[in-house]
Picture 1: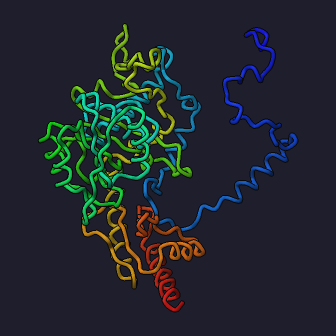
Picture 2: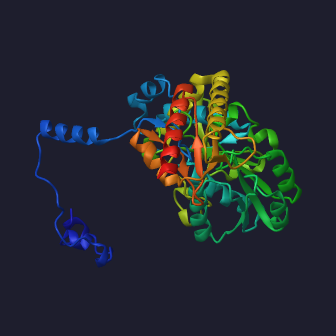
Picture 3: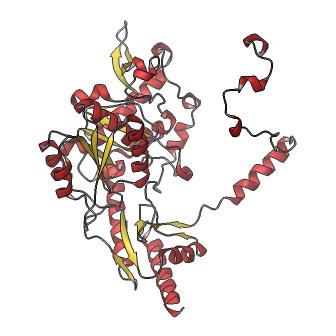
Length: 431
């Protein structure tokens, strides 16, 4: 093979790689193993995994119940290769699954069109920067400081590479986006990205935000938790121009942080700016139902330097799981899950507020997450809970704790947590 391409060695093949990045030694690999030895080795790794016990943490990845039908159907061999469906006549199954995904996302968000899934919610947020910039022909984009920090970091990476000016709008003392700061900075901006609910779990007044943003002739992108849409207003209902988010809460296990699937939806002229591809339904020559790639930018495949986006994968195996979940739950099921999240989180918040030295930081309405300030150091609290098999709240940079409850947390679980916390606090005070 080397001879066929005019090379003498493997080193020549990789000559473009800088020398300081090369290992310059043989790989330190174990000797070959038999199948039985390999199975024993892998089982040893499995047994080292500590899934923890009770989980009271979210911050972007959430522990929800996944009906058994979701992994069962997603495990069918037809879904193993979610490759780009270039040849429609050979890809009807994959094209239909993308079409069903788009339909689910449109129904959840109240938007007109959705694309094939992007990598995750953070990527969807970053891609929305390009959509707003191109639509308004302005390089300035505002975002709420109450977005997930990981999402903000990804947006900053895109902005740096594309020459986009990002302007952060702070959150007020109530945990919500500062409306005065938003209004002051909208001049010359292409749009604004807000989270609903935000990173602190607070429910934003998206109607007021939409009115403010649209009053300045800018676009509004709503980063939403899809589980909440069974209970709170959909982006399309308060006039968002773009709806984005991470599909992880819809039937995807936490998977140590991924893989997940992002979603994007839009309306009006922005539909043609959605990255990736859009699958449409049509009819074949015999009148049968058929699916085709309706909108996709050819530049993404050929003239990539001219493309407005280089998103080309579709994360379809993850998206299929989310589609199956949403269709299994239905509107009533989605609403029940959302109501349980609200009820469990509010019970947890009420009980935590009764623990000495613990206080809720914000009074704003919240969904399934909220911030608690503690007199005892948060690290000390979490270390003590870990010894009891409990994963406590996520520790914020300022020392606050972001607690979360979903339908997976029973009243008995919460009561046990509270009892343990009281013991921990009492022990800390004695020290």
